[in-house]
Length: 445
Image 1 (tube, one colour):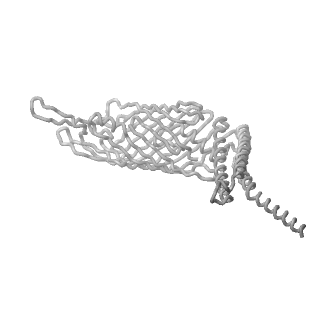
Image 2 (cartoon, rainbow, N blue to C red):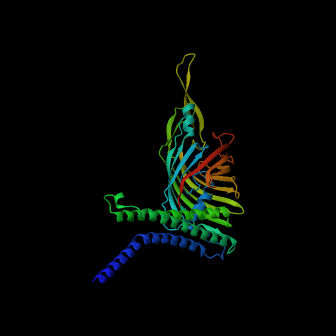
Image 3 (cartoon, helix red, strand yellow):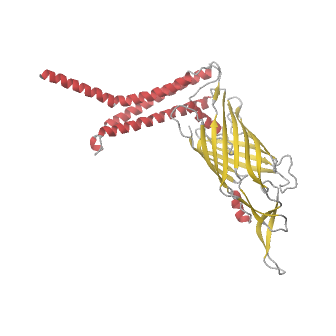
């Protein structure tokens, strides 16, 4: 009888030990193994990509998102440019405007490139408002919101077939996987030791097993997210630092609408002897933009952007009216005092839709912080001028070699062909502009 009891006790203890192993230790080990297996699977997907065509994956899809955010964000000068950051700001000195945008892309759990996203932004001009306050001019108030949807193309990477670039990247990616696996296993071991040390007295009123299960679940979920992110970041950094590729290409298309909150208001008189009346404009815009991007280790970085838009224009902004000052007389005496009552425009005012097509080419030589850009714009209809912008973009990077801010000094050319006659446009139709693009917050990968 005693022997049977001993056998039963031994069996019971053995079952308890096995159960404990499955509940406590293997739960951590199993989760750790799953994370390592996921990293290995992502790496294998890249490694097993056929290389005989000289085109395919050198890094994972999420890593390519980070790579592109580094390269694409090096040029940010206006609303047609792409940023893969959550938030970014563009300041335009020529327009006296500030654009603030937020990217609503939601992270996906799988290893995939960014396919599409919405952007919501605000546009406001401040320079005119500030100067008007002290020069007795009418405020050219502009405040509105922009809603955009962007569809990303498929990134393509070209390299020297199954040569050194592919082999080096495969070897270094494998090293990253094993290094991350060692590190995350150490973290998991330290966590399990700490978890085992928690006693019931430290969590009064709670079920100790339930507490540990919750802590374990949260820890491994966070550990998985952390190391998948590290793997993506280290792959992208590897490709950026080694330049083990010949060419990376991508493209994207954006459709957007600008919705003004405040209408533009102008005082218009038919001529200098007529009374002035108030006119308004609602400068809404509808636009479509397509951009092609090339990153070459030999020739550098190239952006080609084509844009088409329709917007509600007016006679004042088109330079079709003449600018005048309105004066009021306070007395008819010999020493009459005249007060400047502000500015107005003379001529026939009207609102009209202006179709616009434009093309922009921006080039940054390989491993250079300076570049060159050229933009040509053709307007149609009542306002049919051809305008241009010649710019010199300057990219500043942070300590991690990530673009932190983009400056662009510009020369603006208005009505290049002098096609609009008898207007208030100045004789010298060349002006100087300056833009600042600042991406910040996290990347939308």
